[in-house]
Amino acid sequence: MPVVDVHSHYVPRGWPDLAGIAGGDGWPMIRVDSVSEATIMLGDKEFRRITDACWNADRRLADMAADGVDVQVVSPTPVFFSYGRSPRQAADVAALFNDLALDITAEQPDRLMPFCQVPLQDADLACAELDRSIANGHRGVEIGNHVGDADLDSDGVVTFLHHCADRGVPVFVHPWDMPQSPRLDRWMGQWLVGMPAETHLSVLALVLSGAFDRLPESLRLAFAHGGGSFAFWAGRADNAWHQRRDVVGADSEHPPSAYISRFSVDSVVFSDAALRLLVDVLGAEQVMMGSDYPYPFGERPAGDVVRRATLEDSDREALLGGNALRFLGMTGE
Ligand SMILES: [Zn+2]
Image 1 (tube, helix red, strand yellow):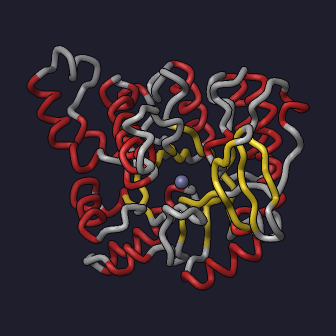
Image 2 (cartoon, rainbow, N blue to C red; image 1 turned 180 degrees about the vertical axis):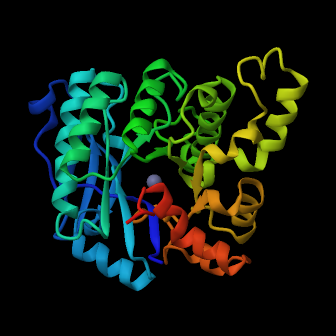
């Protein structure tokens, strides 16, 4: 059984000036600092320092070998999603980055499996870019957990998710564009508090809106970072659904815990107790190894928490690879 990491990111070593391609200004740029180091810039602000692990396939494969990982799902870095731009601008940027991702994964496409990005603010353009990318070799899609003030239950996103289900394409949901405030801007609060809360809200939006009632059960959907706060607070959400059906439970047929089989989560939680909570609440078949490689808030060695956790051997095997093969639609291969 191959060991599969469902949560990693890439950044190309360079890209053309996005203002020249898509128009507008304030686009992410890359500042090359050395052969193996660069910085993603937003205007004149440093967004994130990165290394060649973001773009160098040999470096990635060496790190995978060191960590005992056979397959990596290679997803976009959310700063490039561009959902706040015009649909056409976002479509142009998505196409550019999706093609650059294939350059990184081209030599080992069965070990580095690219997931594409789409202009999620426009369902038609998103479906078209998905189809183009899948035809070119992408194996799934990563989407952000919201489009401005629209959550995953918005008409456009649900249309896109239907399309993914129809095409048998797995969808990985990543938090991004977290709320900013003086309180959340200290100590990386957007990452430590905002991301888990955003992901929790996204799961609840699909449940409480009734979107899961309307979406086909064949949709293969996974949430990053253990599904954020959802597993810990599923009981609170269930209680609220029963106590305030007029408000919380008006649009969904069942309480939140009834939808747990409809999605998976990754294992990027860094703690044995948290991983066991995911397995207890969601079930061992709903949790997949992920690392968030190669970023500082990622896990190295990838899969460490799964390997060390107190789990049945069969559950550990499922978390390390079996569940991911099902998510990726590879169980028949
Ligand atoms: Zn990530």
